[in-house]
Amino acid sequence: MPLTWPAQDREILRLAVPAFFALVSEPLMLLADSAIVGHLGTPQLAALGVAGTILQTLVGICVFLAYGTTSAVARRIGAGDHKGALAQGIDGLWLALLLGVVLAIAGLLLAPLAIAGFNPSPDVADYAVTYLRISCLGIPSMLLLLAATGVLRGLQDTKTPMVVAITANLANIGLNLLLVYGLDLNIAGSALGTALAQTAAGIALVVVVVRGARRDGAKLRPDRPGIIASAHAGIPLVVRTLTLRVAIVLVTFVATSLGTTSVAAHQVAFTLWSFLALALDAIAIAAQALTGRSLGAGDVERTRAITRRMMWWGLGSGVVGGLALWGLRDLYVPLFTTDHAVRHTLAAVLLVAAISQPINGVVFVLDGVLIGAGDGPYLAVAGIIALVLFVPLALSVQWFGGGIVALWWAFSGYMLLRFLTLTLRERSDRWLVTGAVR
Image (cartoon, rainbow, N blue to C red):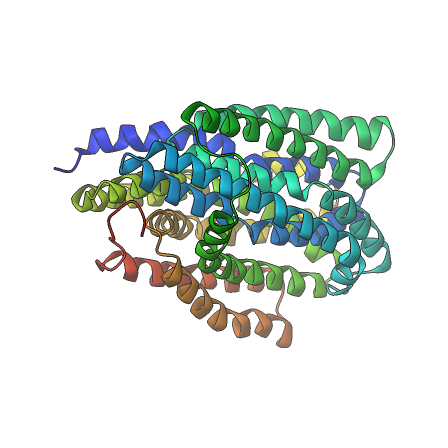
């Protein structure tokens, strides 16, 4: 029998509330970076927007290390295989380390070329290359943090990542203030401070997972078949993530072509959008863990019931987030910039972002449900469809001389496309596959 609504709510909140604080760790770090860097000048803020988008793309491609691991571990927990769950988690950690080293080297070597692709002004480009190269040193730790977080979520533990995330964010603020202003390192200090904070967080969670594996007798050495299997299972999620990141990069590319004021306003707006989106995704994290566990245990009825309840949570949270984004703008906008032109442009963009939040809430929840169910192939196909339809929509803003507000309306259209593909899938039964392994 499915759980009653109060019982469902308790399960969702038990996982979602701690997951909220852990999940928003990265955007909170970017918010702190934006606030600190924004007072250095508009070129530095614009540079953070360009470099931050590239860095988020490199790391975001590997988000399957968290999401896919959560699903796989949760399924085995639901089926009663605790040792096997931790063994699979260790394979994910090794895969994260290998990918992290490769991406860090690529980022260091190709940073100037990547920044040049956005065609920024010379002063913005110099700051952006500096920020990106220093940040790349922290990529291996960022990916280990993703994988270890996924293991713990699959084990139904979101409290430990929460504690680490809060500590890392406090350290990030202190390090940024010290390095940027205390040691006068400019934007380089911001990149270094954030990289150090994320490295410490990654090491802390890896230690927790390794201790758990030792306690249950799971292997710690690299297992080639297991690592390959983890990589293969993550391919559809990589495709899904790539489509999302390409859409985001495209929006930043078009915003950059509209001028320094537009890209600076876009950076602040998108940082806030990302914060709210990942806050909504806290419910999706609960969805991944609960969906994987219930399908692993073979309980389809319970999976259906809790999915529908989480969709209502996503919608309601989106409404609240949108109202806060618009209603509190006079309080938080001055924290990011003193440039009156940027503030004026930002106000118009924030209205569009606020209106789209309820749709975003449902999108992120259903994304979590289908990831938890291991329905990566459908998410990959749906992502490709949405991206193909979005590309001409975004480029038309540039072709026909539209502004940054028109670009954000186009991006809201992209989220609507994702909403339609995900709700269509949820109504079917094809994603409801039971067992320890999909």
